[in-house]
Each structure stands twice: as C-alpha cells, then as structure tokens.
Amino acid sequence: MHLILTGSSTGIGRALAVHLLARGHLVWGLARSDQSDFAEEHPGKFFASRCDVADWAQVARAASEITATWPHADGLIACAGIQGEVGRALTADPARWSATVRANLDGTYYALRACDSLLARTPRRAKVICFSGGGATKSRPRFSAYGVAKTGVVRLVETIADEERGRPYDINAIAPGAINTRLTEEVLALGPDVVGAAEFAAAQKQKATGGASLDKALGLVEWLLSPASDGITGRLISAPWDPWSSLDTKAAALATSDIYTLRRIVPEERGQKW
Image (cartoon, rainbow, N blue to C red; front, side, top):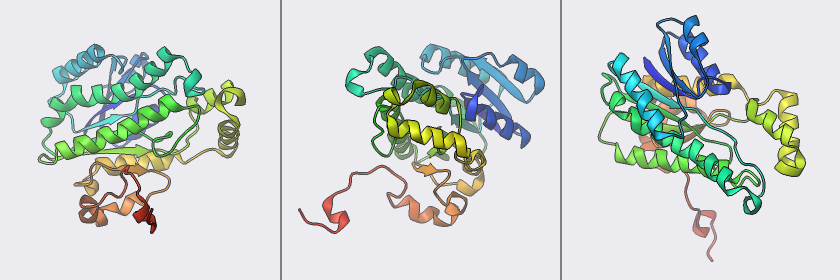
C-alpha cells in the first residue's frame, strides 16, 4: 500500500513508520522535523516532506509533492499531535490554548483535506485513520485544549463517514491507550502543581509499569488498513480495550448502531424517568 503518515518523526508515529515499512508498505511521512536520515535508511520505501500540519499552506504543498511522485494513496494515518497548553482552562494562556487545538484538530483536518484527491485515485478501498484518545470521551481536567481537540477529531471522523458513505472509503478514529511517549515525559516534567495530582500519579505509574501496549496500537492500525475492516467507518475504537480484531463479524450490526461513537445519554437509557 501507498500510505501517508503525519507525525512520522517521533513517538507512535515513528514506531508506525517502522512497523509499516517492515510489512512492505511504502510510507510518506509528514513532520516538522527533518527525516532525511530515515529516508536514506529506507531508499525507495520511505519518503518525507517537512511541514507543520497546523499550517494549511505547508500541508497543501506536501500533498503536491506526494502527487508528483505517487499515482495515488491507499491510506492516510493522521498521527501528528501535541499535548500543548496544560493547566486550568480558565487560567490557561489563550494563544497557547488555541495553538494546541489548531495543531491537533486543524492538523488532522488539513491532512484529510489535502490528501483526499490522492485517496480518491486508489484502485482499492481507501482507508483513513485518525488518532484521538487523551480525553475525547470524558472530562480531563487541566488538559482541556488537548481533550477538546481530540473530541473534535472524533466528531470530524463521524461526520466525514456519513458524508462519504457513497464511496469506497473507511474513516475511523483510534484511541491508542496510555503509551509511554514524550507526552508522558512532559506530564512528569510539568509536575503535580500544573497537571494535577491525579494526572501526575497516573503518569508515574504508567512510566513505572511500561504503559499500554504499543503493539496493540500498531496492530489496530494494521487491521484498519486491511480488507478485514471494510465497511467499518465513523467509529472511535480503543486499541487496548475493544475487541477490534473480530469486529469484521459485527460490521453489519455496527453500520446501523451508535456503538463506538460519541452520543448524549438521556435518563431513559439508564432505566430512569425524570
């Protein structure tokens, strides 16, 4: 497959690049960092464009570079993101708060928008995977900008899935789990006074125990790229908690349900009448 991967220079993104290359895929990585050394290690297999995904002009230029070399793209993995502004929402720096949302939410949308024409040319079913998690399904005190952006990613995925149901195109969001990355180190460096006692204690425990399985996150991405996931779209799937490897047996039921989506709960759904 010809795969476009944002955030490919560090963390989960770099692990994904290595994983996908090992399985014979061609990968075009987008990142703010220079990846020429990595490209030289994988000639003809890994390609790179240097860009900030929060800047539309840079993302559009990167897409043009890909278009000039590849006839199409079979999949897009929007993995780039930053933890950004941390602290109580009502005392946060407004510019840094906004920049955090822009990097995570706009950065995902820009990649989807810029690469869609490449995906439209694939001879197979197009696959799009967006990284969410990190507070998308519940309140995460002191990480409001990150959580709001990741929640927005889920709603964007659901909306595009509905809009594109008439084409061979699957788009899903994934929650990779609490994997030890630079974000964990950032939380520990900021300390409990900034991130809160609960977040700090959780990060300490995560680092000490090794965190969630990176292999499960990589496996979920691989599964969503495969024909086994055909027709499963508009969902938020958790790598460590959901039975994703067998969801192909539930594809028809998922298509007519709101399972693995974000929805408002009313009292009747809890067996109550208010």
